[in-house]
Image 1 (cartoon, rainbow, N blue to C red):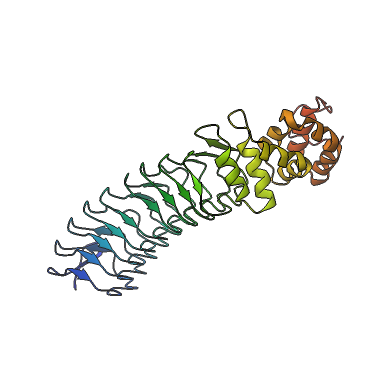
Image 2 (cartoon, rainbow, N blue to C red; image 1 turned 90 degrees about the vertical axis):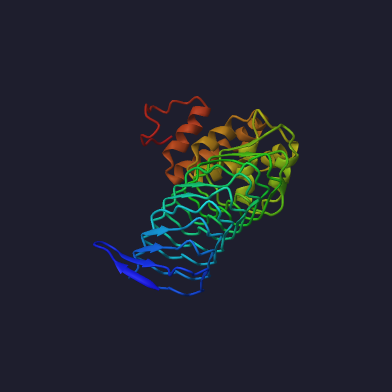
Length: 338
């Protein structure tokens, strides 16, 4: 090892001639602020720099082809990375918990991005994938809470379990036509996801893909064949999520007797659900389904009383507007009693 202190940083120069940085070589070295690799390095071993909490800058060389598992996990001062153009593999949990990392561009050369690689990178707001990456592995972006939008690889085939679990900042998502499989809980807990576009080629390979996505108001499909929508619905087990998915998928662009009959059976529960989770857009959407008007008339008073007991003023306003009752208020956020 060669170390050199500059005026601001403690720089570690990995020795010339090193082809592979050994596993655990510099684990938990809190004194390292900058890291420079020689041209000889082709591989960084597992856990090599895990827990280097003051590491701010890394200079890779073009010869590097593989970064091992947990190699830079919990390097909590690392803000950016410039990957080399010949990199092929990023190991499991390689950058887990790098909480200041905010921007990542993965080069086109990478064909193997392993599971949980960027889990818990809570400042990561932008990531660019190589267009030919075949799959997003288990938990690869789990708990990346600052990520609001992501463009998926053009030729992506599979999104695996928990890939976007807990990405609470994610709001919209377009799944490319190349994707033919999404696994269990891929978007679990994406509580601010409002709009998803799903390809007709999709094969649902797991259950509860969108569990806990309580603001998912619009699920779009690339054509109007209800088969994928019904498969997605039938592979959702939690009652509240089934209601949410049914309402989100139905609309002018898609009709399904399976979803319609389900909502006819559970109209009251659907209305109460959207009162509970303060989703006025979905409440409004249910109230305006023409095929539910008889069911809505039957349960309307009970639902309104429920909203009143919950103190949900906006929901009461939406309900009253549906009945064209002014209630003597001008602003729907004002308190009122019927």
